Image 1 (tube, rainbow over the protein chains, first blue to last red):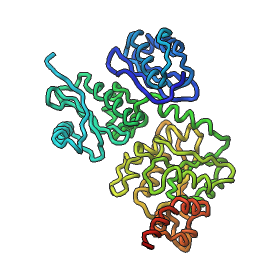
Image 2 (image 1 turned 180 degrees about the horizontal axis):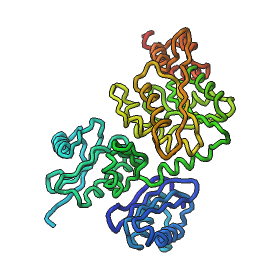
Image 3 (image 1 turned 180 degrees about the vertical axis):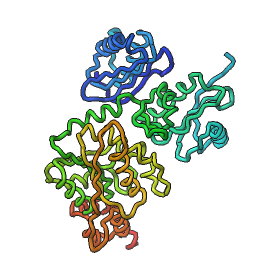
Image 4 (image 1 turned 135 degrees about the horizontal axis):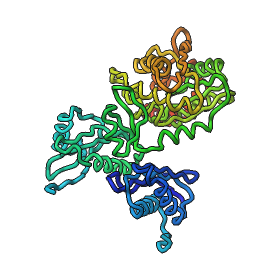
Length: 95
Length: 351
């Protein structure tokens, strides 16, 4: 799956996160968080797993986190990717 | 909670009553309504506007929040909506100017500082990877050498004066990076200007022609360049653009010298040249200073060659007089671009 257009999902309110996706030659993931020291590694893990499950191979993914829970991170990343990838034939069961 | 908060959009040109209310809110915050704002995002508590943020061509302006609502997360809600609205309008990359002491407020809203003119202003963008990734893309064009030069041209259109400037600059450095201003606000479209520069410099060694970007003389970094009838060119107007060059662009490419043609005509450009010495060379900052070299304009028959003179001739379809001021590569492209217009006018005259 490739990101073909710019898209975003989420907010910058507390306990949420903003995910932006852009078309890009490779796969580049940038993560910024207010709780980077404490949870940075875990956030990176959740974002990475979500992208892998969705089969994202190309795109620039920018995550700005305000202390969101794992399930929120997963949901926001999924929604942003789906908006940016314009995919029709998605296997929802795989998510 | 005893409130009913709605976030809505407001077009200041259509909704005069709304615009007047926004104006009152701005004034109460020591701000002025700006004429180029296309749309506002406003927060209403029942009927009353308690917060606003304006959007003008990818630049966020006139952000104000009513005194009694400060300290809540209203700014975040407003700015989230500004980003969503801007993306719908095809402007995902946003810039914002603010006073340095207000920067932390916008940092909480997803804006990241690019540069600061201490005590005056700072420029922010709505992505943590914008300027970083741009520099990364420039680094691919780095060249070896002791003296790495740079010239920034608008080339509206590319003249013999520009060609002379590039040739002389090349004599003084090991490699020259030539940037073409990307903002599409000139008589001649960016794609055509870039094409003219590439054609005019084709075959020259030790030189790279780069397209411009939002970080180099754009409406975001240098708004007054594109509004030349505003005679007042504030200090910050040029400082932001030059500081971005010194702190990011020059280090990415290893640029040691910036060459510039002397400016006998345009006040704004002349001020930009003067400020170059200040912000690139003299001002003390962490980033290494860049040597600024001003090269006297090429003269033809005792007059400095200027692109504005060529545009005057172009308006009169005087291609014969243009041959003394532009290289053949520019002339042939101008002919191609304006051939259709000339045909039309000939048709009118015949009719």
